[in-house]
Image (cartoon, rainbow, N blue to C red; front, side, top):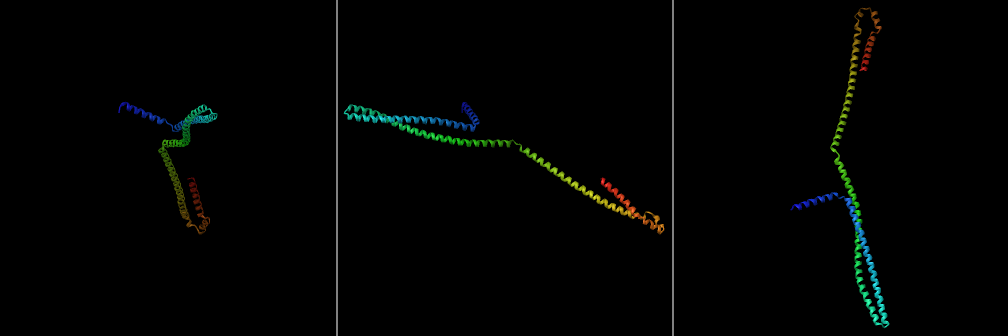
Length: 263
């Protein structure tokens, strides 16, 4: 392969590629229909001209037939009058118009065939244009749908889905951590309440035991009471010494309660 052939192919391929990229399907369809409509206008003009020529030939043929009939009558009239020479001239004129009529008849038949063919072509072209318009609308709708699909795919491709999913995962992790902290706080709160109630129960047992010990120790706290007479012994009992001990215990319990309330 020669150098110039290679250059020509490269240039041709590049031009074809540029033309293919520059072609807009929608515009190309519009242009094709415009061209078909221009052809339709020209074809209609051609049909109109052919029909006009046919009408003109039909008139010429009809006129020739009238002339033939006229000179036929003239020839008969001349013979009836005994003028054979004039009858001959009339027949010669009739023959001239007969020849012209034959030629016109041949031309008229050809024109009639041509007009019928042009009319069929016109009907076919009109049908093709109507079909092309319908197909154009369908193709335009498909082009629009394809462009919308292409734009949508471009948007989907442009979206950073991995980053978005990572964000969702991070948010989910934060929610899980927050829920775990809330649950831990609830458990710690419950444990603290249980420990407080346990301390209260434990403190109540100690207080009861302390009060019982004080009650046991209170009568034996004064050793001289055993040397006193019975009258003196019974007198202090009437003063109810355990009640004083209970008042002391109650005072201490009140103090402990106040301390617990302040905790």
